[in-house]
Image 1 (cartoon, rainbow, N blue to C red):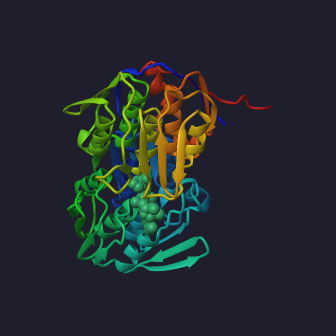
Image 2: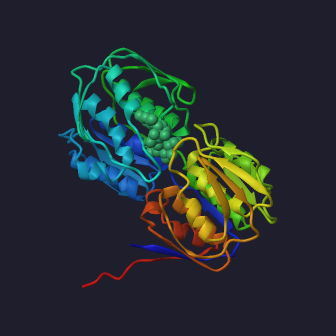
Image 3: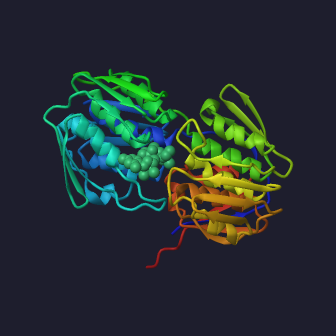
Length: 422
Ligand code: UD1
């Protein structure tokens, strides 16, 4: 397994262009199945999760090429709607292939993607939504078969604004007969990007970004060319890394509005942030201030995907901060690893009480999931001495060559791959 070795203590400095958003690109790739023919998607990051999605699409019979950030996807040749279990298990978000496959083929077979490091990730809202559109769903252990001769528009209320369920329903409803309304829909920017993409293919969808989305079903969609939005979580990770190392970094190709909750938190911590169009400048010279209370919640509130990274900054703050995780129950596993680096954190239920320390110290730590891994990298950059981050395949799921990106900002970070045995 690859690992990252970091010599900490050097402030980040320089300019970086932010990659396309993984969480926007994944549903957009799945949604491409709704239109037969060749769709071109630009600004698609080169990541493990994207590779898995493209492999699934190839397995379904599509032709897919990914180079220079552009995916050319021919869905004309797709001939099956059965996703193999081995591929489903590699990525949880493969579940949102259900909606497009059902809409295109009238039937799909998928598998429950299994347990997840950050806690149970149920799919009941996805299934309820598809059932409301007229699908019959049978579950055989972890195998799910979903059938619908015809999808019919419906009023669907989500008991929780699940991102994936909102996307799955939007994609299926795009080709349903009549109007679908999703209330208490997720409002994340990635939902808005999916709406823009589907509408570029000829769908009639309104309201993404609000809690009510209306989809007027159309008979067919046409392939198009589309550019994915910038990755707000990658941008946020770099912003926190700049602050934690007391550096100065300029981020290009961002959408600052997508980061307003993070910008607010960082400013409360005393970090200087200047926003100018799609550029964000982050600078910090002093020890961060503690932030009394941060609670993760659905967008536009503070994102769970930036909780672990911000926790690292708060471990170095002057005072006690409280960080509460409300989206995933198992998402505080990085606390143990940060404690090995000298952080002073107490966990009570889903809240972390963080007493800032003057410095962290390098250690050998393990990435337990994607964002926890990114947090440990930030901790390593800020710490005194050498940090080794293991299990970095998690990080490769969401960050395009993280060591190259950070080296360009002056970080002393290298990847080591094991020498294969003969
Ligand atoms: C997406 C993001 C992920 C992010 C998460 C929350 C992608 C590919 N992934 O994941 O990075 O951390 O949003 O912002 O976009 N839930 C149910 N039943 C369901 C579906 C979800 O109870 O049918 C629960 C989950 O267990 C979890 C919460 O809702 O506790 C949030 O899940 P959801 O919004 O669906 O997240 P994902 O779409 O899986």
